[in-house]
Image 1 (cartoon, one colour):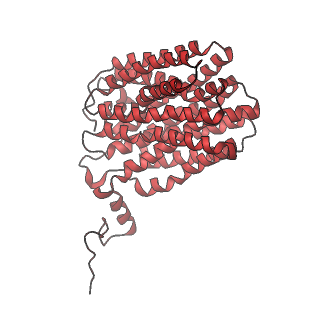
Image 2 (cartoon, helix red, strand yellow):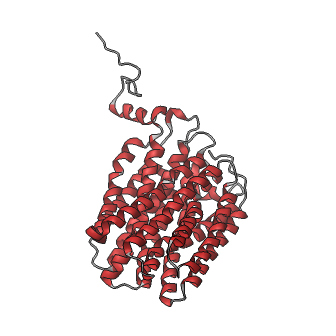
Image 3 (tube, one colour):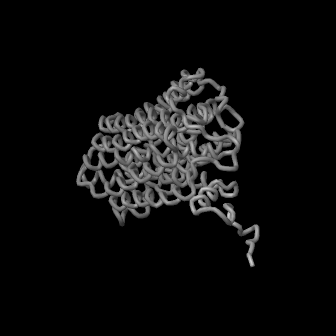
Length: 425
């Protein structure tokens, strides 16, 4: 006698078919499609922590190797240079050859190189290992953006990407708190090893839960582009592409200056490394809340104008922060939280802006190009910060200069065309 499974426990692939067919259908089941954005959210968490953990342990590394701020700026620059290469190269490859495969390759590269970097014998080997890890970290961003948008409800692609990218500040926030608690006992090498292990642990969920196409839940099939770069500037998108790339570069310049050097600046002002790491986590807590607020607004308002307004407000707060560091206390916490809310929150929504603006066939390339150009700012920001700190120009002038690119980014996005792509999701 044949026993029929109850409907509630019948697998979504049914009772027949090969193992591969069953797994493919299971991953594409409408009941389980939420696993794709959830998994991408976890990847964003790992990316956020792995990218920014160097700023948390920078005071310990600088003390051990007696590095000047300018010398350590090169290590920061190596990570962000790799991320720029990864965002551009892997973003284009993802639209040509498949987003899931490129995401898996990115995670493996980031995890292995971050783990090995813990055994660096000096600043130069550490810089090169972080550059290699950065390629993986940068390549994951366009892949998870495209995969999340593909599996979103019609017309909700940009909002879904914005919500998924909340994982980035969540990862940085949790990572900052955890690092502050353990770095005194495990040292900076232990922190790097932990970051590499976290990246490798997420490979299995991506392989199991992420599908390349949305399956039965979507009528629109995803078509990969044969000429992804050409599509970014066709259809009247040239000016918008230039502006979004410029704004991303300027935004990442100031935000990575802040996340890279804020703990060090506070330490130089007499704050303990553990407390400075917690204040750095406060910056990312503000970014998390700001990203959530903006993600709610861009579903109904112009994404470019909304992000521009946030950046303009952040520029004003940055300038005021430099005048308040002479009197450390609750005010500094509040101002750093506000900067995270306005600037880091705006940065987290840039991939959603790209998904709103570009056709679905070039989501990865659009996000990848914007983030690759943006990473140039993330390279320059910490290096300029190192030079300015070595020059001892004073905290007031330092943060006043940091406010300028944030305001310029706001003007660039305010001038961006509002109309979205007709082919976007």
